[in-house]
Length: 123
Length: 123
Length: 123
Length: 123
Image (cartoon, rainbow over all chains, first blue to last red; front, side, top):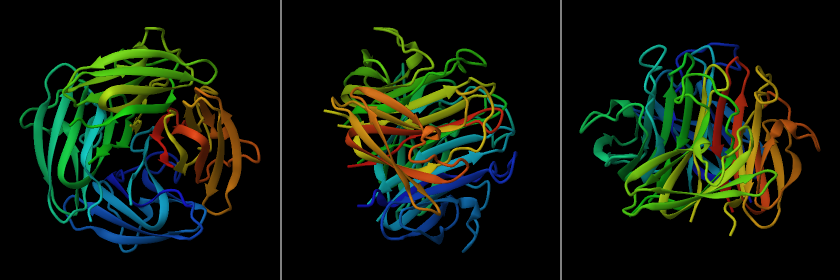
């Protein structure tokens, strides 16, 4: 029996506008970390919401069974990229239960700052 | 079907008393980030609680359908402003389901510190 | 109707062993932030758990109706103080629903680090 | 009645590849902090998931009744160690209810960064 929920959301999306320090480890970024403990691949759709324009997406990805995927939102490119320095939010929907954690590394100053939280989940 | 809950709360509110670094990106601040995936506008009331005085508010705002709003609590002004350097807490109530995430950027020193957590939710 | 739950827990308690920077704002500390939205006072008992000794407490406190209390765990003294630089955990139990958020400020280096999370709750 | 759930998961596991500052307090590390409020020992199994290889484990440990254990994932060695600088995720399963919190200290730069979140839980 897989662990998790099928519907997840984060509200504080923001890719800092610049970076300092060693690349790519310390590039300012946001990650959506997904764990799929199921025996089936997780087929996932991500929708990005903004404050002043229509939603973007869906972005689609597959997380194989018994695998994790740490997706840097900076790297999304199809159908389009998330602009940097802009407020956004996102929903993550899967066909099987998954666990989602949201992490930001902000290296706009010399020393990096970090946060992470388990995302909001529902069925 | 919109994602989220109608009633949210955070307990650790605190706007740091000063800031360093580039303004306004690195101004010390607290944000209540709200995602409204509903087809209707979210009509929201925020109440601020203190340790030694009566609650303040409600502050009201609207988040349009399919939009996010990252509200800097530093910017609330009507009916009054939240004092800086003072412990507070808050509740966020909406007419439609929303998702709320609470983030603080503390730039009181040369390098900023950051935290974020999905808020407490109930129906 | 008050918001929250009656039983809360955190697992990662740790008061850093030293501090740098302006006192008391930037003293290394852990805080249990409590919001009581009820019309009655919240009568609260805190138990501290360790890795290699019996639990300590209960510490008791009251949060008045419609108030928040940001309790620095460094300041607990009766029946005894929490040692610094030692792993601990804690439970928080209340007679009325409350919301609890756990925050650490670590100023052991020149620039402070910060985390916060809504605690685990149950009824 | 013990507090917590029996099944927990985190999705953003990553042990930073290097450290600066005083050792061992400021060694870059990830911790799974477990609280067992039960009267019985908690018998725990941890499975580590990766992005591109089969899961590792189970790692087993016991948390005595009324005790906390802050496990540095860097220290796991049997059946094998978690590689540094590699994305992973993990599940934590217990025979009695426990509370789990996930914390990372990243000291790859001169000043450390910190995050913590209550893990995802289910029964």
